[in-house]
Amino acid sequence: MGFEAIRDQAPAIGFLRSAVARGRLPPAFLFLGPHHVGKRLTALALAKLLNCARGGEDSCGRCPPCRKIDEGVHPDVETVSAEGQFIRIDQIRAVAAQLALVPVEARRRVIVLSEAERMNAEAANAFLKTLEEPPPDTLIVLCAESTALLPATIVSRCVRVRFGLLAGATVRALLEADGRLAPDALAFAVAFAQGRLRPELRGGAERWLALRDEVLAALERLDRPGFEQEPERFAAWSDAEDWAFVLDWLETGFHDLALLAEGAAEAHLVNGDRRAALEAASSRFPPRRAAACLREVLATRDAIRLNANKALALEALWLAMKDTTGTGGRA
Image 1 (cartoon, rainbow, N blue to C red):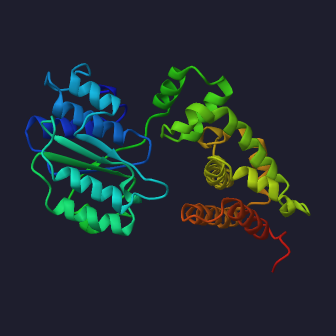
Image 2 (image 1 turned 60 degrees about the vertical axis):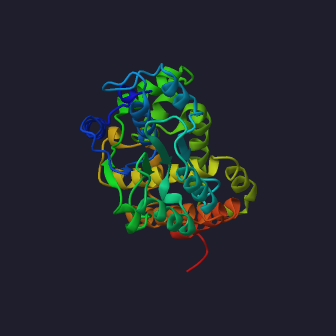
Image 3 (image 1 turned 135 degrees about the vertical axis):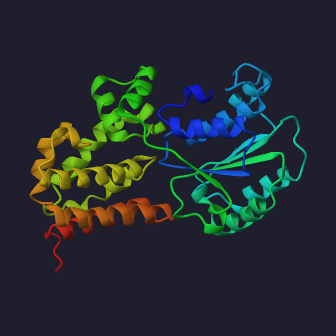
């Protein structure tokens, strides 16, 4: 995949093409933008262009360097991702050890840090030393959603490149190309994606479509006695990636409730196909309560990412939302 295959990121691609053509590449780029919009793919496309045997305005995709990068086996092009919750110091030390050596075969070695904001404090401090004295034959690309969780010392040593959300038509076309989604699941996936091609949508949209209705039904029972005595529900939701979807959907759901309160049209809702259910929930979640519940959802996500027990965190979230509606039995 070369630059021509990157969708909806023309300003970023144009800037990178110009930098390569002028021979004005910095030691490090910081690709900023939402997750799952093509930042890592663009970094690898840049690595191919810099090492393609054919040369030109884009990589050929057929020469040995291009094929090795596509297959993830090029000795001088490496992607570093989080192991568990964080990118750890031992991973950064391994990168530093590699950079101390002469490239095996690349004209320009490329190191890509995916979700660089997930470096823990030790890893970030160690990585700063690499950025302070980068090898002349190496390009480092950090991919992050924003600069908020990155040390200013790291941000200041990188040239920033901005990436935006994908168009809905682009997400639909890419999901349709897989040919695995039924029409209702496809429509749900496109709306829920909100401009990001989340890989989970390709294999899990049908399951998430059913899970969304399960969460909606749970919200309808929230004010009924005994709902909090359903621990098996929270244990089930904590399995695999379901917890992430439950929280992501609650975020979109409460946002939709706020839009409904403002009289928004169905087309502006992420869950417009469930408008009737949302309208039924709006009496229990007027704007102020919906905002309070949204804060609880965001806090729960942060807690789980810091290794809180998923089932207990989800149960605590539901109790907090029940309390917000005034039916939790607490003042």
